[in-house]
Amino acid sequence: MRTVLLTGASGYIAKHIAVYLLNAGFHVRGTVRDLAREAEVTAAVRPHLDDDANLDARLTFVALDLTRDDGWETAMEGVDVLMHTASPFPMTQPKDEDALIRPAVEGALRALRAAKAVGVTRVVMTSSTAAITGAPLPQGDVSYDETNWTDPDSTDITAYTKSKTLAELAAWDYVRDEATDIKLTMINPGFVVGAPLDKQFGTSVDVVQRILRAKDPMLPRIGFTAVDVQDVAEMHVVVIDKPETHGQRIMTVDRFMWFEDIAKAIKAAHPNRRTVTRVAPNFIIRFLGLFDPAIRSIVPILGRHEKMDNSRAMKTLGRGMRQTPKSVVTTANYLIEQKIV
Image (cartoon, rainbow, N blue to C red; front, top):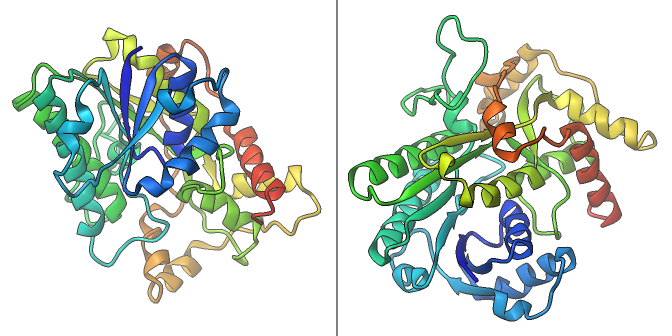
């Protein structure tokens, strides 16, 4: 049985990845900052397994910190594949961008250095479309693909976008310059939706929750290229044994959705809820951004429609992507059923 070191195992995406890995016959060694979360992850994963026999032996845990060297090389002993998903993703941007950039960049390099030290040569990492789309398309191009890069020096990008870009660049540079034996594949998902496995979920689900709670009188004219969490999780596992993905970025996305589209999908599925679908004029958002840093951070993407070429993702999976309007509804259904909203 091959072993995968899955970093950030308590994350929304990572729990889904753990399910796919275990169902594919891998032993998963999950990293968490605090071993108190071991029971949480195990309980979230167990109901979705084809066979939960001997789960305590097949799903184990180790405490690691993205910002500390302690324990990384020991955790990597006996590992066949490093799957690095851990990286901070906040709902609001921090005052100090290094609060995101430092753990993202240092964490990626810390994981890669430990892999190199013990001879782990297969690495799959989670990046983001944020590392691809944070710069204007070259003249004549109509859609983003894996050859595009965000400019980390741009003043129009958020700290999160900068952190994902710099972390990915650092990983590729390290493999090229210091660890040429490592076969790296980068997964670049968009805005991830789909039912979480438990009530500990990430920022993208928070967006659906916010819309369900009708916290805003109007929606900003912003959107993202979305993807189902199961497609993202499956992609991480499918690429393990695909040599053609070595050295590749794979932009894992379905389609672009405005916030309005997300709200309308929820409204259609739950017509009795007071879901807001009205869109605020851009000038109102810009004005509010003068006083609210969280709103200010979205001003650069107001009205921006990103077209993306997901042909590499579909070729790698061997099929089309799950339809994200349905994934939004699945997310909303879970939040309602669990009485979270």
